[in-house]
Image (cartoon, rainbow, N blue to C red; front, side):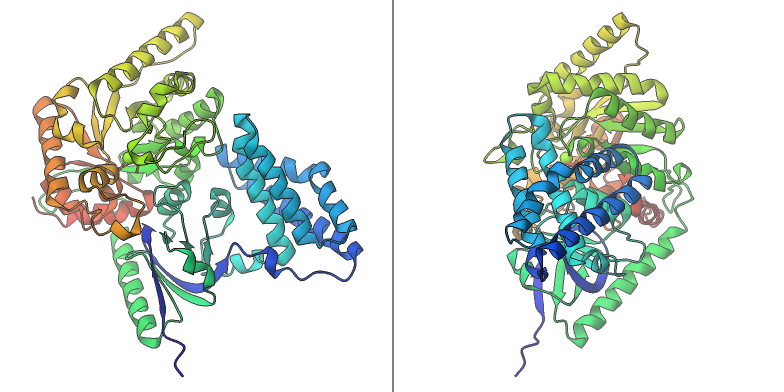
Length: 530
Ligand code: PEP
Ligand code: MG
């Protein structure tokens, strides 16, 4: 009987690459706990697991900075607070085992935080979820598995902190049943070059053992036969060969085969991303997404100022384009975004920021203050009509005036817009006074093609190389050239070797790519003859 035919799940590639290894299931941890013989042993097991989780978080804090460190500090404080464990210890006294007692108490606590009217507490429920899972993993001993070289972390979704604590130096990858290619963890995976596929569906939870992850095609294969394994190895080797031959281009300026210079910027998600990037390998930051700062709720002005200043100082005078927060769509922020039936077409990006001036003005002040520490440019996401840009620009002027009155050092940076809503790409004439355009090819493609970027079943339609998308990109590039407005592109297409020839032929001369794709992007530029 042949019950070993391969199982192939198709999702969306969220970070390119290949991995083969044991599937490490992040969920289903409670079920795999083996109860102890006595309640005294259960209590010892729980206290031991909390101590292990605390030690793991403490050592992570030493390797983290900025927002990631703040999140972990909060988690360590919670783990050290006896009042969190007391109800679980009491339940063990009543006969429960350590894993289910801990899970039940933390689930109740999380529900309480989520139901709270207070934004701060709602935002902290994600941290509690992390703490719950971290202690459960320590109880069951699966942290060992996660650190196996080449393990593929699989689950419903993955917390950014779990990503940051994993040692990816030996390979490995991420396979998610749900998730989104625009999530924070996907941004981190792209920026660090970890292969990741999202949207694999519920069937993922039934798989175990060795799997093949193809994060180029967005496919996960279990029970692979010899032929599948050989094909996977060949594709992975070809991918690795392209990466290593591209590495030689990293330290050189980007130039086409016939000598046309192209500016090559990097995209940054978490401010700590820049610690691993050599500034001499790029022309600056083409897009700093600030959503990561908002992933645990609303950051105060000081937290934001420190994050922006860090990146500006790292850039040592090269331009840094920071985007005001693009919350909404598939990037919910507790206490800020609203539940909507069709979030990609709803209150997202600049629409949301303008609807909450109390929150937006905090970010504007942090940006105005940070601007004196380098060459800052600021852009607004999801602009659809000119009045949105005009209102945002007026708010910068108002906050600058308020800072002047207080005698606070600041500077108004050049203000530009993302071109990612078709209305702007089709009629850019309304925006003749912006300082620059940055094409968001991820959203421009999904809106032109009417194919959601996080829906695997329409991924084929979500194609930046479609003539309709390329025509709009070419028209924006031509409009910019005719009016002296610089035009760059910061969507994923900017780091995609297959798309770069099209982008340069459409007239673009400034591209921004994730750090892991920068070398391949420069190599692709070198292969183009204009
Ligand atoms: C884009 O839409 O291409 C873009 C760069 O923005 P984001 O992916 O963050 O929506
Ligand atoms: Mg976008």
